[in-house]
Length: 384
Image (cartoon, rainbow, N blue to C red):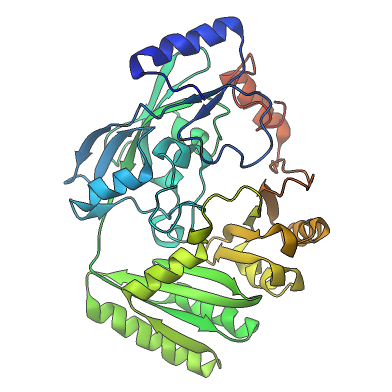
C-alpha cells in the first residue's frame, strides 16, 4: 500500500495514468478484501488526507478529508454534542477502533439500522471532491444541505467501491445528540413479530432503529427510540409493550446502556476483522424479510437486518456453515425479490462473490466513462 503526502497525490495519479498502471483507491485498507478479489496489487491510500476541514455546528454540516478515521470524526463532533448518524461498520471492534475512514465508508455505501431514521450515508453526503483516474479533480454538491445544482455525482460515487475514482474530501450532514434513548427487544412467534414490526413503523415516534436479529437461530426484533423528551420515549415504549402482550410476545425493556451493548453484539463487535469468516450482504423487500427469518438455514448464521429497509448482514464461522447452505440462502433471497452478495468467505471456499447488478451494460458504460483505461479497482464491477 502506497501512502503519499497530499501534495504528491495528484502527480502520482497522473504518472500512473500515463503508464496505464492499474491501482485501487483505499482509505485505511481494512476492508479491501470485501467483495470480489481485486486483480492488481497496487493500492493507493488516503491515510495522510486526514484533516477535519470545517465544522459548521450551526448549519449541522462538516467537511473532512477522505482519510479521516470515522472514530476521530465522531469524537470531534461529540464535543459539539453532534454526531454522524451512521452505524459502526461490521468488524469495527467494541469501541470502533477498526471502523476505517470516511472515504471508505462513502465508497462502500452501506448502511445499518440507523438508516430507519436517518437514511443511509449516500443521503447524508452533501458535497464530494474526487480525483479521476487521469488525475483530474472534480467536485459535486456544496457546503449546505439545500444544494441541488448540477448532476448528482455524489450518489454515483456512494457505493462505487473505488471503481470510478478516488474520493478525497466529503461534506456531510450532522445531527444533534438527543438526550433520551431506550428500547425493547421482542421475542416470540415469527408472525407476531411481523405484526410488531408493522406497528413499530406506524407508531407516532419514528424508531431510531428497528432490526431483525437471529439469536441462537431464533428471530427477534430490536427497537431503539430517541427523543429530546423522556416522556415521549416512555409513552411510546409503554404503548408498544402493551401491544406486544396482546400478540403473545415477550418484550424486554432496555435502557440506553443496555441498548448500546446489544447494538455492539448485533454487529459482532468483539470479532473485529476476522477475514476467515463468512460475511454476506443481504437485501430484501422489507415486507418479505420475515419470510427469510423463518428459514432453517439461518440457525447457523448471525443476522442483522434493518426491518424498515430490508438491508443487512449475515455472518458465520467457517466450521458452522457449509458452502451449499450459502447457495440455498442466496436462491431463497432471489425468490423473495432480493439478493445476497458475499463480502468475504473462508479461504477454503470458492463461491462467487460477484455483486448483483440489474443492468451490467449500464454499469460497464459508466465505468468506461470514468475510467477508460480500466485502471481502478479491477474486478469490482462488470466489464472490469
